Length: 88
Image (spheres, rainbow, N blue to C red):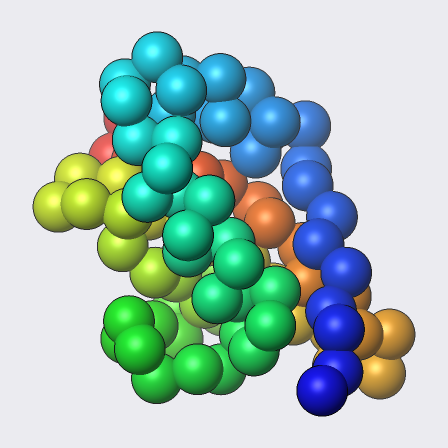
């Protein structure tokens, strides 16, 4: 099994603090484990993003918040871009 490396943007690090205070840390950690083991796992479903974030993917943490990430297949790196709503 291939192990992917997660890297976090400064924004994602700030978002992590918000998720902790919002009580969404456990759900987020579960999603990050799924993404880390296979960023293209079908469960839970992910979306390919378009527009400014074309080439990135997102998975819902809940109705409002989502994890947005990019996959670098050659390097086996997953860059976590955001972990909070993008509607703010």
